[in-house]
Length: 189
Image 1 (cartoon, one colour):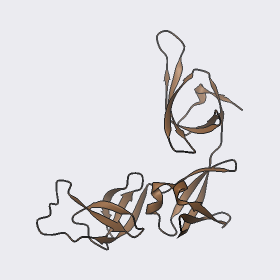
Image 2 (spheres, rainbow, N blue to C red):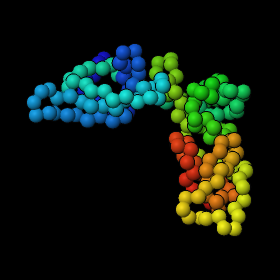
Image 3 (cartoon, rainbow, N blue to C red):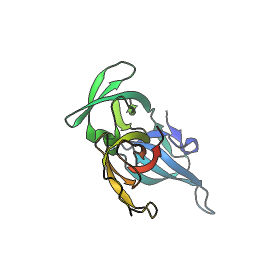
Image 4 (cartoon, helix red, strand yellow):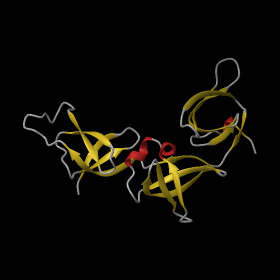
């Protein structure tokens, strides 16, 4: 059942030319002369890339239902991550490349979300923020500046490396944004 541009909303997923897209942002435009149209920013669900596309007002698309399935990360096996479906308890190996950069911040028992359309897994969403222990970082030395944005590398319990302020030491728990890899704050234990 096709829907037209008047039904557009953020998060809506649909098929177009064999691809599955999700609306990130849209804007209805009514120019002084000529027909109305809708400007959209779309995410290509299979690749994660974004495109800008303009639709004529009233143009139709075929909506698709994207289900979010909860999985739990169990362990790493070579270049694959083994996940468990939290409903069926089925374990599946997933190539790390399919999960993307966020995979390096996963620790055992963390939950991730699979985006599924029909029988096809379109991608995975790791939590936006994770709290991880600093395994290794150089100690702060007298004279290291606290202000001015000075940072040092720190290796986390998952093996990921992030830049942290000089006051962070080994054993500290820090909050990291998995989308950018940025240090956010030290977590009080």
